[in-house]
Image (cartoon, rainbow, N blue to C red; front, side, top):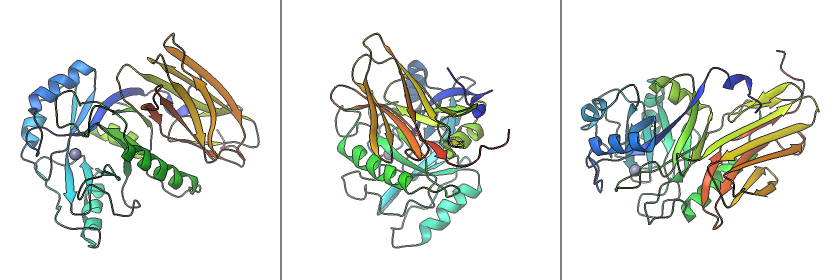
Length: 331
Ligand SMILES: [Zn+2]
């Protein structure tokens, strides 16, 4: 498999960035039970995002060890949408009593960022009172396009489909140098059996909050419904290669997309560009599917990969690789 420059020296870590224990309304598991389940599932990190409280921070922190990173956070449930603050200092509570007509949110988001944290627009199309995200996306670092099975046992719902569609529109309008918010997938677990469905897979230099948040911030990440699913996705032109979240600069050469999906046995994989779904292949029943596809910078300013099961429910979703026309970056 081709490895992009920024992938060298790093590895993949799995984690769930939207987790509620019994310290949150409707949460039925203790932090201890969730940490044990995370270890059982093979997750490397969790973000504790209780609703508007830091009361559980100490308890969460005590559960961290070399094999499980705990990132402290909060779900900030405002009157017109929820957002996640990730990477808070212990005991810090972010103000939540405002709505999208009130500029107060800007200061809160900015203060999280200036302290090294991330802000995530949570479940933007959640169909319940105050669940829908009415703030402008700009200013938030990430968009949670894939939120867990809160309304049943399906890991993919209509609100995720709507969020994915809207997020892709923001990618299509992306221009080099302009910031874009990478996608994230997290479970929003409240009940037993929901943890990790879905979760994020990030490419980071080490298992620290700083490194994981830095990887999420630039989209060095994918999302998946199961820790048994693995994804390789690299786009190359000439002797340059780029992975998720990166930009491939090419000078008119043909662009090759290589992807390999392991741990799935039925369904399909698709490549998505601003022109829509441009390539599709069935998943191999052998459990490993490899695809190769060629394009040009004129046809594809970004390329995303998505993997769905036979019913159309999402199994894995990548952040985009962006493609710039123009001369290659000097190496
Ligand atoms: Zn939540």
